[in-house]
Length: 343
Image 1 (cartoon, rainbow, N blue to C red):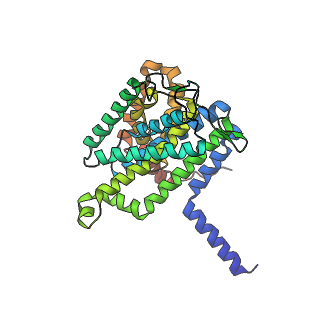
Image 2 (tube, helix red, strand yellow):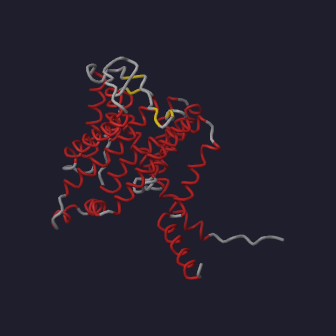
Image 3 (tube, rainbow, N blue to C red):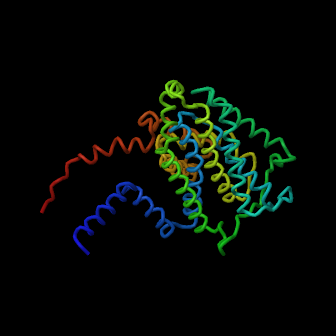
């Protein structure tokens, strides 16, 4: 092989690494190796569960970070997808359960979630700021009470239980290792899709609308259509998370779409960093760890107080969350002088 060929190969490899980023490569390696060092509890209850909540928060990040629209109805979209899996799939309560195969059921549930999200967007995008938050919170609250009181379709307070995870390719996907990799694979696809969308024509237009909607409207862009389409894409991501969530729990009930869960999604996204796609996953790991272990230390009654204090502390110290705090500290760490070695 000639020197020129070797040089071009090295340059090409370097270019790929630069585009992907060393951080992404290191993170991917850590996530792939994680099952080798984690117990089944940490694999599913921490790893997979964090990825699911990270997906829901990612759908909020897409709206808030790139579109400037903070929606509290993303858990509603995820819950609708979960209910569709229970109603049109199979459940142990002998209520509805039409027995659709997973390869029809999952795309249908995700599509309906996207359409519902787009409908919510069509209602809320004509407002801004606190008004958007209040409208989407009202929709999430209304759906929670409707699901709790409706027995014909949602089976009221009991919801649906005994919802199985599908088996295909000879794998039972609710087993700890396959389920973790399933959640990881879906999260990677959604994460890459959001990164790609941010650099696409649509994503750049959406960010410009976030910064100056009046100017974008003046040069001919349909601001409302762009915002509604962003809600649709966010609903697809939330729908994927809803399918994984109902497979994780094996059930769905009004508690799945409780208003407190809607607030948790916002807390996760803000703690991790609302302006970065990786932020929701960082926030999800942080919150899930606190949920899992802090309750035993401070008690269930003081848990919300603890979360509130952590949330306020991070927001005051770094409005861009944990990721923003790290990016602020990284230059100082890089410039820190190395101590001379003693011999």
